[in-house]
Amino acid sequence: MSFKVHQSKSIKLKNISTKPSEVCPEKEAKKQLKKLRKKLSKLQDKMYAQGKYSVLILLQGMDTSGKDSLIREVFKDINARGVNVESFKVPTEKELKHDYIWRHYITLPERGKFTVFNRTHYENVLVTRVHPEYILFENLPDINSTEDIDDAFWDKRFKQINNFEAHLAENGTIILKFFLHLSKEEQKNRLLRRLRLKEKNWKFSAGDLKERKLWDDYQMCYEDVLNRSSKENAPWYIIPADNKPCARVAVAQTILDTLEKLPIESPELDAKTKANISQYIQELESE
Image (cartoon, rainbow, N blue to C red; front, side, top):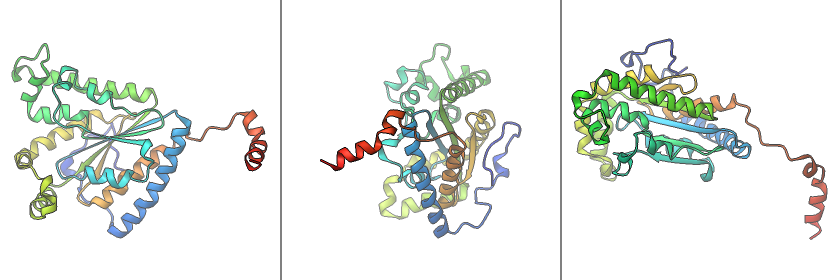
C-alpha cells in the first residue's frame, strides 16, 4: 500500500483510514520490523562511509499518536553516531529572537547521518494556526495583533517552508515526512491508559484534554499542510497510527525503499592501498 501524498491529488483525512488496510498481527509486525532495522543499519553505515547524503525524518501527529515509541523502535539498531533525535517544544526565549526555522536549521543532519524531528517546523503552520496568538511572541515587524495574521501570512509561511526544504534537498538531504494518522477514539483510549496506569501518569498533561477539544481544527490544519507541502523532493506519507506496531513497520519500510533507490555504496580504496593489502596483512601478522 502506498502512503504517499501526491501533489496532483487533494486528500481528505476523513476519507483515509487510521487502521492498517491488511491484517497486521503484532508478532509478525515485530519480526518484520527487526529485519527492516538491520537493513537500515547496514545502509546507514554505507551512507556514513560515502558521506554524500543525509536523511531528515519528520514526524507529526496528534498527542498519543506514537511518535516517541516509533523513534525508539525503528531507529534503535542504527549506530549511535549515525542518528540524532531532536524534539521541539515551546520555543525558548533565545529561539524567539531568531526566525522560526532557525532552531530547526541548526539541528540538521550531517552528511552520512540521520536526524529525526519529533514535531517539526510544521508546528509553525499547525499549532500557531489553531492558536494564532502564539505568533505574537515572534515579535514580527508587520504583525501587531492577531488581526494582522491573514491568509496571505499563511501563504507566505508555506512558501518559506517549501523553499527551505527544496534548498536542503538540492544539497543532498533526503527528506521524508510522516503524519501519524490517529483516530479520536484511539487517542481517548491512550489518554485513559496514561491516567489508569501509574507508570504512565507522567506522560499525561491536562493540556492534552484542552487540545483534544480542538480536534477538528487540528485535522483541518493537518489536511492543509499535507496538501500544500507534499513535494517530490520532500513528500508526506500518511501512516495509519491506530496500530502502533504496524505504523512502525510502514515508516521503516518507506525509509528503506527510498534509500535503496539511491546510489549509496561504500567508497573504494585508492589503487595504491588496494594493491598493497596483502603487504599490510603480512606486516601486521608478523608483529
